[in-house]
Image (cartoon, rainbow, N blue to C red; front, top):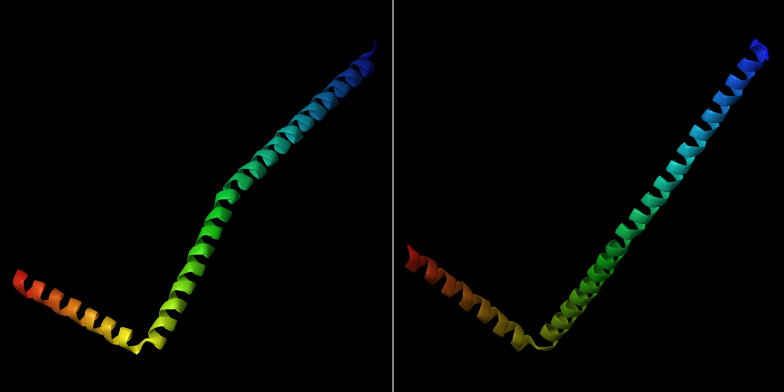
Length: 101
């Protein structure tokens, strides 16, 4: 075997090593992408639950606000009573501050 044959074997071996290296890199990148996809899906599940819970709270707040508005519109005496309670609470709070000084 001459020098040309040895050079061919070295070149073929180098090409095989390069091909194996590239294949290994692609396999590792594929596993990394799978892991990232799994992580993202695991993170998104609780976020969708939080989003649903926030939507439920928002709906509940809207219903309570609507019921309160309807009740106060239909019962003007209740509005006056609520005003009196708030005024009494403010007076009591003001007396506590004066007593503390």
